[in-house]
Length: 213
Image 1 (cartoon, rainbow, N blue to C red):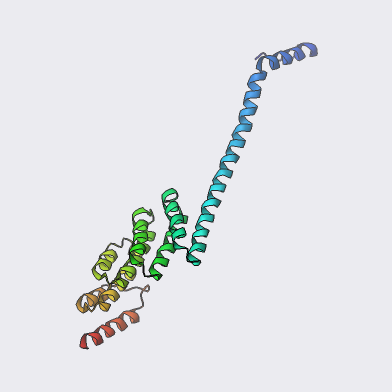
Image 2 (cartoon, rainbow, N blue to C red):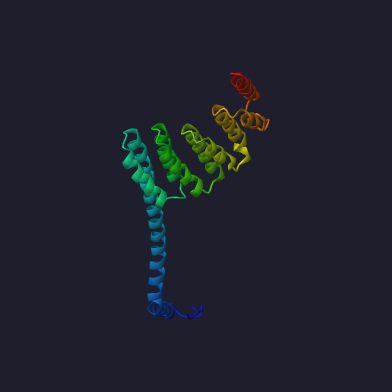
């Protein structure tokens, strides 16, 4: 690009500007269009993501609606799609938990366990995996799968969930009349404010009564 020197006349400077525009107009157009395209592309990308998010949210809401109306097969189809296409999102987690709870309420234990197994295998969140384990163990206990329930609870990872896991394991063993193992589990519960000590003492008293019957 030529310099617009101060000692040039107005006519000379005007001619230089015209010549510069003539030489570089195409480049200017490309730059301007590129900038517009970048902004439009970014906005389009944001809108596309928002639309996709809304679609997934609507599918998750539809799962709940189908479950309330007893349309289990329709809900299962939607949940399977969410598990396949949105496995890392909270939407698939929420939908799976809802479906599993419905199966449990209907005493379809195998299907409930299958949903919790998916969460345990796929969730990247340790707390969510442990929540699924606790719920899965309750399903297994209700299905009289005592040993399987104990093994599920033994796999709990997060120390935060351990007191609840020990308590549930002890309750399951007590219900199965495995008194010695139940007592060990009650006594292994960490002493903290998460589990009331009075609750543990009451369970141990119940255990002693049941042993004497």
